[in-house]
Image (cartoon, rainbow, N blue to C red; front, side, top):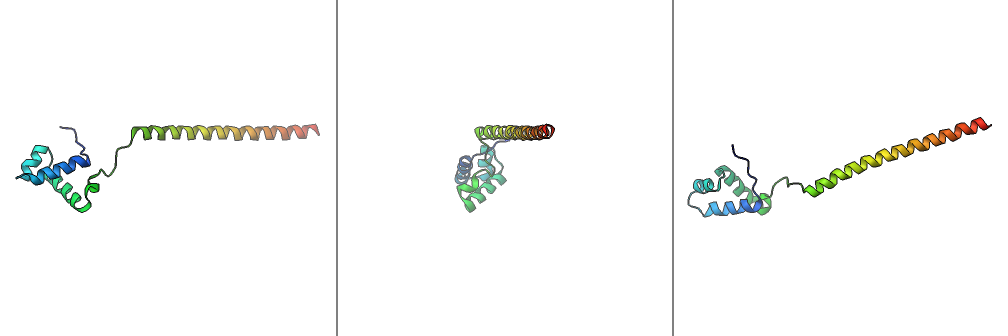
Length: 105
């Protein structure tokens, strides 16, 4: 079983132009390794939306952006933990001072 190939918009456009100029759609598609139904789908999309329609619907995520997103999540969790620790410490100090104030009276 072969691995699935992902085509860029440029490759799709080149395939459309190549198959359009060929004598046989079936033979040209076979040479390119695509199914004729895929060619017709690409061609219809290209005719309706132009090159923009050939772009992937879900562009690949930039690894650097993904790395930064993960780091951002980690820092947010760390900030939340430190904020909670600070609130607990302030509450403890407040209660300690209040109880010492009562004992001194």
